[in-house]
Image (cartoon, rainbow, N blue to C red; front, side, top):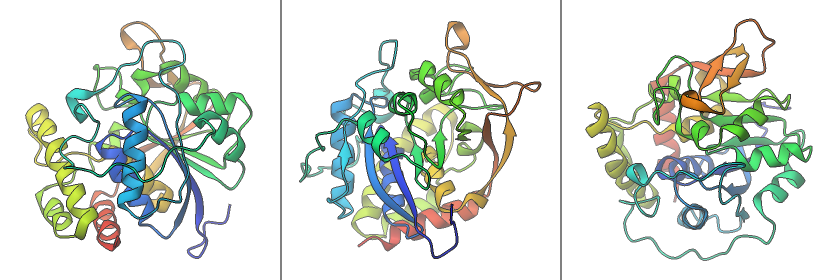
Length: 305
């Protein structure tokens, strides 16, 4: 795939907005290195009704109403849905203010159908939620050029259980299927996203950055309160935006070529374990240039009209 500075990388975002998903979408739309071809939604941070509405609202806020949004899976492949109102509120975007109703509706095709038709060599999929839609599409022989997934963790403890990160925990069967599909996803997990926190200086920079920046700052106020209460951090991680950043500039993270096993049952459900003696099946992000990432995020959101 041509990733020269002048080539815009075609990207589809599969997401469950969610505060950090919403910021990731705005970040992607503001970045000239990538061409957002479509957005698909999945149930995760909130129900599919909320995540789809939120995706439509955010692209409208950014002035990109022409981007197709396909509504996806209402729950995991084989188990009940767990959502995160304790993190994202009852709407998924609590704290964002009085947002207008979306000016557009989802397309007729569902997310798995859309991904199956559109994921092909040359297209990068950035997945920032449970991998339900992605697993279905890969099962139908979709083959993107690359999958960048915000999910999992290796050394860092999980954020749902000690073993599991939220996206992996919600649909571990889908995650296991994706890692077994031969596509070698890039896993951008808690090991790096917890390092990339948006502190007060960056929050105030965003607050002064027009409508999209103010919206982002309000999201971070609400979202950050959760992390301040739970961890004592002065700024929240924006997990999903880092996955988008890897599509924009892969050099922002250092990865290792490893074999990742996804545990699907029992007390370790959702654990993404590195297995040393098996052939690599993924590229796992282990280090991030935090300052460069945060400067890139802020500068791009400042550029939105």
